[in-house]
Image: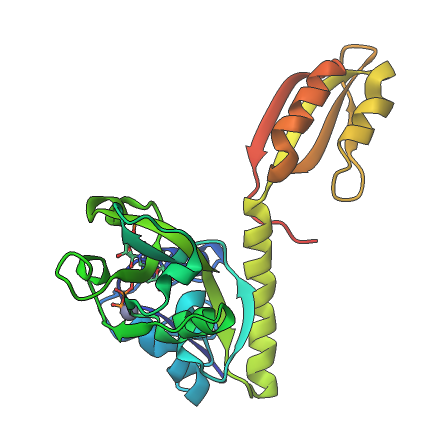
Length: 285
Ligand code: PRT
Ligand code: ZN
């Protein structure tokens, strides 16, 4: 039987969210993650665990059909794979940082400077676009200590909370790339594997969509229903059910997180009462 193979990070920042995404897709992967390879119980899927840096190459070569990796790694490694879907976790940005006391006047300050990074390709492209000639020192870890030990004038590294930069006396001066985990795919999947991938993608999209939406239930006087339905467009249109109390109805709908609080305020202004907000587990449109 044909199986789809997926490469996930063995351990590190993306491991848990990647495994959880598969679980939320209803894929049963209860066996031990200390193994290099495990098989899903209820979906034709094999899971390989690798270092994140190796995942783009393994997907390019077809060792794995698909993989989950930070977009920073995908772009830096320049492998021939397709990006299918952004996954909404592992968010960070790649930034240039300099010692806090530097009077940084703009990107031209970097001319002639030494910049330490693990992302030489992305950095080089950024410097080229801005016509900057700088000396890139490629190092594989602990980039943030480079200025302190006199190895570089600036660094280019991933930032999420900013606390690593702060505790190393550095300040962020340019953000050059925004990243999150992405699903990548081998360029030539056969038809059977493509069909399995389509099934998996349907589930991934349903899980992603559910995270951005809330199910909302409220009570409203019947004379306000028109206005309330305009505020709550829903997937097709809101559901309206009569309450036992005459003159009142219950309205159910789905609201996107971006507009959530704005919508709640409008609903209250229109006389909505007993508003309940419920998480959605899956959302298939
Ligand atoms: O062993 P393996 O090679 O698989 O793992 P790794 O050590 O290379 O990667 P890992 O687990 O650290 O990160 C995996 C992916 O997570 C990265 O490729 C990014 O896509 C994503 N990610 C998200 C991050 C961060 N946030 C992050 N903050 N990767 C690294 N960092 C590091 C950063 O390099 C710096 O050292 O965290 C520090 C900064 O964090 P803050 O919170 O102090 O700003
Ligand atoms: Zn790595």
